[in-house]
Length: 126
Image (cartoon, rainbow, N blue to C red):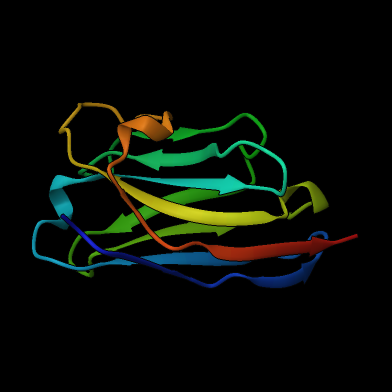
């Protein structure tokens, strides 16, 4: 098990940037693929981005490609989501999650992840 704590959310204007961080407990962070998901009110949780255990493979939802960047620092047990050119439709609670399955490529499916953070709110005003 790994415990995850997100930070960095807030209220910004359209076009602004935010960087979300997710700090993980434990000494086995590098054995987990990591993902960022988001959930807007009344909507299903959706994948935003994911990164493999080494950081060498990434996945992005079409809606964020070219604007968001996922990265990880295994020495700091932290995964990041750099969000640029934010849009009002990016407003949601953002969650990070850890996948312990050791699959070669990061999954975009929420069911693949067995550890979740508590979420951080991102609100983008127009």
